[in-house]
Image (cartoon, rainbow, N blue to C red):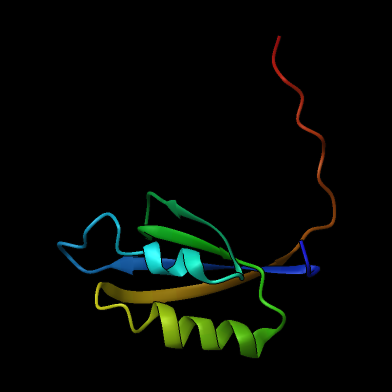
Length: 89
């Protein structure tokens, strides 16, 4: 990761949203992944933005301009530790 801080943009879609509504975001170099989620939100975008201003630009100029996005919420996180995953035997 280029930055110590990462951000997640939670997405609530409008009814009838096509499954590929997020695909344009994958062209942005800051986007590290996109997930379909359950619960209160429908999707989550993992963003490696340089700072808060860059994240806000991404959210308001790319995510919120998508005709299928109903609302968003952003969460920041800084990783303190990650264990190594071991394959199950």
